[in-house]
Length: 271
Ligand code: GRF
Image 1 (cartoon, rainbow, N blue to C red):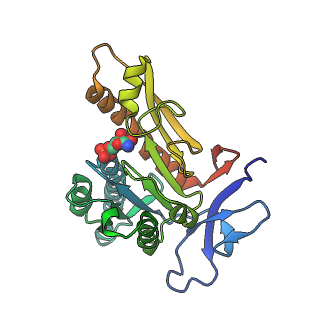
Image 2 (cartoon, rainbow, N blue to C red):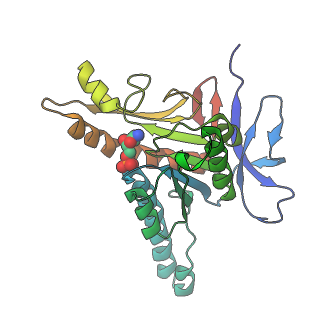
């Protein structure tokens, strides 16, 4: 049976007294049910709330932070030019150029550069280690609950080296993206660049996809091709891929945030 279409739009919750102006993503199922209940509409300008998950150096995270900061600077600059110095100091965290704001960064380990980058940017962080929980399922539920506290519209797994479990994915159905350093469906798993080199392909790349529970096999949002060059080793190839990957991720997150998206039978389209 074909996978039912899932539509993601934007909702203003009717009974959300805590965040009366917050626009949250809503998953609309074909039969018309939606969760949470509310009036579906395209977001009128509030930035999408993003939680980013990391495990290592966090250069993809940094690219997202830089995109948001560039937007803040642009807002401040525009306000100053309009002679509104006071308004500049309170510039909104995001606007039409990017459209997303990182509300928290989570990790599955401590002492990593990714968390340092978030802290330097003044973004709340948390770390939940699998080994601190009795079972993997307990960890997955704890991660779900922690991420949910930040009420994200979109969860971005950016170099997060753990598979997200069914409880986590059920809570953020159709709202979790991941980035993989290969052109899916080729070379899934932890060693995309090394596997591409070993196979001898001349072109590889990166893929941003919606997480569906398998290994790098969810609906593809966007891909970028990267050449394999003579003399490449795993490190040089991965670094070239990561340059493309950061640009792709910023572009994808911004477009998802600004436009919303539809996933229909694995086909992802921006609204
Ligand atoms: C990226 O290439 C990602 O696709 C892979 O690990 C790398 C993470 O890089 N899973 P960084 O931590 O964002 O620098």
